[in-house]
Image 1 (cartoon, rainbow, N blue to C red):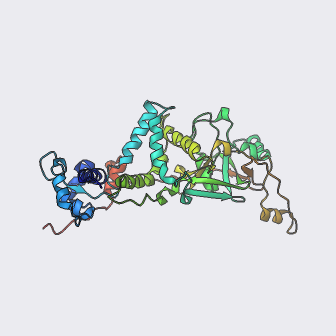
Image 2 (cartoon, rainbow, N blue to C red; image 1 turned 60 degrees about the vertical axis):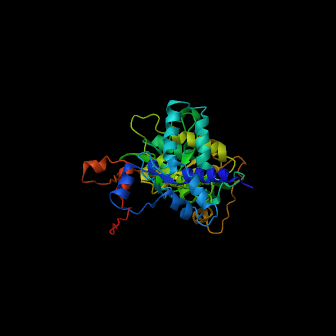
Length: 403
């Protein structure tokens, strides 16, 4: 039989961890509630929290539970009645936003290469992507099959440079050699991984060509299939089915909200003169490679250069293997050499992940670069942070009956 005192302490612990208090809201949110009368966030005292929110009103021990409630749960530091607030994970002070900032600060300024705190944080974030046993949930796995295109592009300012790509596209459009690989969004200098895009237009944008450039692009396709962890689908991951009476209820809701915003944090443009801009995404890439590299071959993430309309693919280094033999699209080959001709595809090696698609090479002259901008009438709007922009969205309903 459970000791009632132990039971009551556990219930109060659940209140403290699963319900928000004044300390968990910003001054802006508190002002909206108490000054402007917003009812977007429900407000109650401890007795209503325990009786209605926790559903304990009919328990025979309820009066004894209320008598057991500590003073700190009844009164705030100003001596007024302590209020509790509903929290679906969308409060401005997200638990995981703060942890993310600490994660970035830790790998930038503390322990970059052997950082147990960073691993613990990433375990807590990406643990929701897998089921018990470590298998990735199907909603975040994207499969690219044989015959589906992944595009690569390179600038080629001279005829000789373009001809070199034309003569050996599987090499020239393959991953950058390790000794020439610079720091990129997902990989540090010296790590060779294949970056590509499911859309030709996206890969043309991603190489940051300028007006007047000559560009050569081509497509590759999996020799069988590649599986990718699709970071653009993180919002589809549902948290565990917990209630207020479960440990971790509020934490899981905050994590769900954080996951939907994580891909935007990882897709921010590189800051000028900031050599560490990509450090956090590089650490995340390496973590996901080690954690899920046996299940997937790489990642899908939004394309910053297309305002997230297009997507990018980065294959893990061990999956960035291009075959020496080309793949011949059956329909295009029949059109070129006769409807009745059947061209036998080469027998690709077991280690080959991708093959260059014959007939996919295209030569581009960049005529213009489109600039897309969001226009503001006030200078303050231009320099407003993400939090201010969020506050400007219509979110709170205002009470007209103040009685």
